[in-house]
Image 1 (cartoon, rainbow over the protein chains, first blue to last red):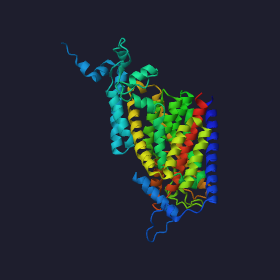
Image 2 (cartoon, chains in turn green, brown):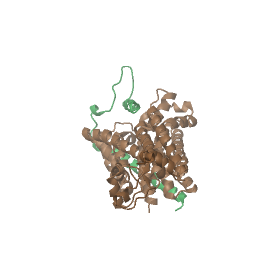
Image 3 (cartoon, helix red, strand yellow):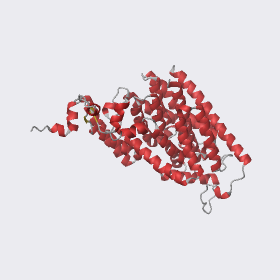
Image 4 (cartoon, rainbow over the protein chains, first blue to last red):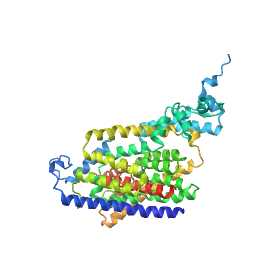
Length: 72
Length: 413
């Protein structure tokens, strides 16, 4: 088989399957959010905020992830 | 009684009486092994892998002796020039010879039952899965997958280059997988496509993956100016908290769909998503078992066996030099591809997206995400991109597995 044909087929198929998986993830998130109750506040993965700081929850999760990764 | 000291010091005997090229190669590999131990200890390369691998490499090349276990056990004429070790023989194919060696070579059972069937790669994947937080992908699936696909540039482009250099398509695909920057995936693919070259390919892959952490920051500095590296990312609209239930559903559905699409890579998909499911199920006992004992046990076995397989007689082949060049080329191209993908999102978002995140599409979890955050923090300490980088990083694992499955499916027949 021609190597260019191999990479062309692989590139197209991997792109299609990857975005198909992304679509599944997106659809699942939408479905679950549609049919589930809001998560209780206790489940939020936040780190304690310090006085004077104005982090939103997502940044706090990111900081926790940075700390966890850099600690490894 | 005449005493032949060379019979006592058999290592020296083998060095003196073997082919000079092979003797020099053995000596060089002993030095390389010691260098790997040193670099592992210094933290330049990944110590968890390099210390057992380096020591294994040095030891196996020092432990060669005149040894013919198959004929010895069968009580047939022993070949006095045949060399071997008491570790393992990867070239054995006949079942009765294998059964004999399993009773003599101490690592042969581990190699046969754990390594050559890809079990060790699956165990590493299981451990990696238990450390992954797929919530980062679920928060932004499309951009993460896009970056991961761009960061597979080396995996695609290296294949025709390797083929042009004289490698077969199967060998070319195996070495191109180094661009996916996923050690277990390279091992799995090369076991399926290039069983005679899987040792040098996997060793090359792990050596370069160790270098990625040190080398990619220079690539980022070369391709991304400081003022762009420091871009602060605004939280997106979809940055809501993803619950463990959602992550569990994602793991179960994705595992089933991907295994259905690509049965050839289903052991890898299953191991990865089983790890994710264990993490999200909240089974602390299983999580501790998988993320610590299984992962580190498999990493030790992997490092040790990779080192022990680096015996000069096994790995010396004219194909090794091109493999060394192609491996680094593949990884470099993937890094460039990831950053170019980051630039595409940078321009599409009206210059609000930090292109450094693209490097995390190279799926060396979590090293490349750490590299991205480190480079961004150096340019702007207030900029946090880790959540985006981890999303691309985890997507990279999935896309690399998909590409491995396509290569195996296309080329294995």
